[in-house]
Image (cartoon, rainbow, N blue to C red; front, top):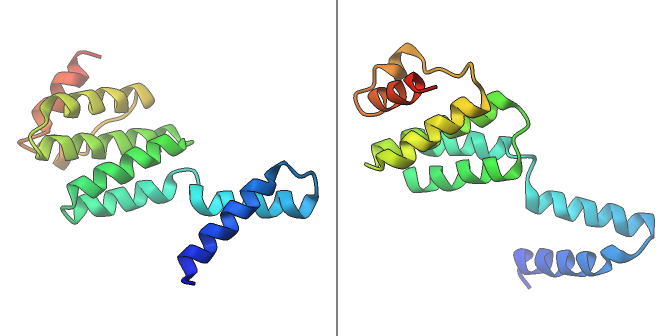
Length: 135
């Protein structure tokens, strides 16, 4: 039996026992859940940014959405995830989602702004300026 299959079976067994009141079962269940859920989105955010920087836009989009779905705690991290999603949409010729993500970044963190180099980008710079001008 391979390691992934064994881990899946163990996880299934522990989740089935999750209703048990014993402390060891509850602790094991919590540990298994944390393995599958990640650490609140920060790891997905970092991975999404790396994928974006490597030009893997589809994977970047998936990881950044996962980060947001996991519940990033810091408003600046939320804005950063939306910013990189906006960049991803803009470079793949999806202007409306790009615009929407910039709006979400500003909603998450009203002080959000692009760096001078980012703001001067010919693809997303004008989109961001138009969104920020409406806020």
